[in-house]
Length: 182
Image 1 (tube, rainbow, N blue to C red):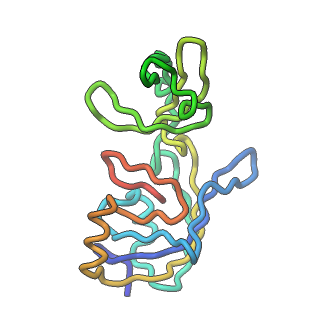
Image 2 (image 1 turned 180 degrees about the horizontal axis):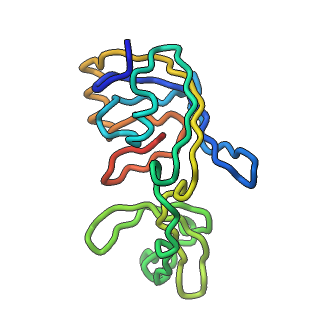
């Protein structure tokens, strides 16, 4: 069976990016923890799906996505300083959760949810980066299709309950555009 709309797909992959001429492993979906999703439902990057469309169980793939095809360019203006007092709980700064390197769920003034990574904590502000962690990166995918089949009613129910996909070992970013694992 070929990968096409509304088919359940399970695959393994290594996602690498270039780091000063070396490939750095960013995500890995393994046989034990494959990426499993319903194709054509907006759960994955459009360019990712275009590159695996028509593949069958056992097929290997290797392709590259430019930043424009993936998570866009890195935008400096998405790094902002937020008043430290918005991170207080009962009048005390939350120094257990608000630490450099941590990614926190946030909400903008319009109620849109987004993830922000803490770059620095200063005396009166917290510097956060709201770019996708892979923004500005050229993504290299190498993997294998493990399974393609018609979605069962149970799988469809599980997808609607879990929010969209089973990302295996990768970091999941649910936003207005769906779940983006690959």
